[in-house]
Image 1 (cartoon, one colour):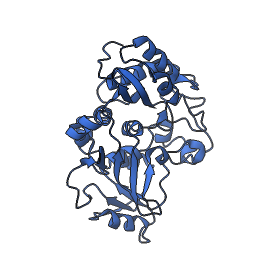
Image 2 (cartoon, one colour):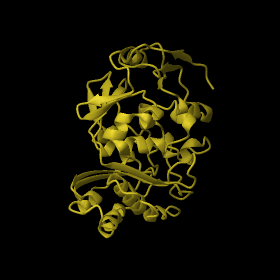
Image 3 (spheres, one colour):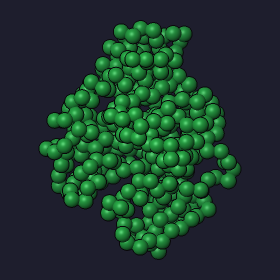
Image 4 (cartoon, one colour):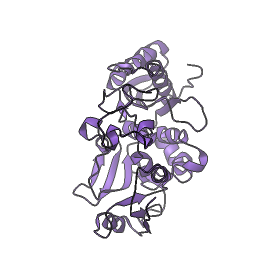
Length: 332
């Protein structure tokens, strides 16, 4: 591990100046540093400056989560635990709290940040292993194509087959979230535009420009929303597939639905076919909801070891929709 300096700026503006300053060649922002520590250990990152933004927050904003009109404002360094515990999140957008409550362990959620969760790097074992010079590290091969791909993508069709690692991002997608920025020409960016597919730049997953820093996130209210996942272990583990759903209801009839899947594609994967199929369906009509959920695998293509995701995805979508409708998915 190479030596590095640590800076503790007192504002996002100060952090941004350090990020683009000329004193250091490889400065890196650090929130909790959970993923960064892994990268340092794995030899995937060799910064000469760590800029600690864990405690940086707008002086006028004392709370990690606050009301923003009828929606919410989440500070970039709000911890996942703060999102889980927030009464505003539970009232206005429960899918956010449910999604991050399902991430990692309590000790990690106590320090991991919202922006850090969005910008963490993929967990693909070929990317994480120093013995493989894969596409994401500038090599010529995605080893998952002919190798072990049990946990890889069923959407996107490459050239890199990672799955996006964030639990929070799909929840924010169904709440029409916006990330707010400092340090560039853009003041904000729709959450859908924060991430890009591998064919738009295989060595990165997000579209932030050099020097841009996320300060906070705003999102619409989605009181009728829910999250569901399937894991190999229900304790600390990465989801095999999960879904987030937000509904607009007219009595017991679904007026509109927004559904996003996770752990199945290189980006949070929107499922417009499911939303369209749910329109006009009664929340008590299990047959119609199940039929709509089956549309979630439209366009999916399994690899040699992950065809099971084609069966799991409709299940988690149906469960997320039922939870959004206020129903207990039970054994479904």
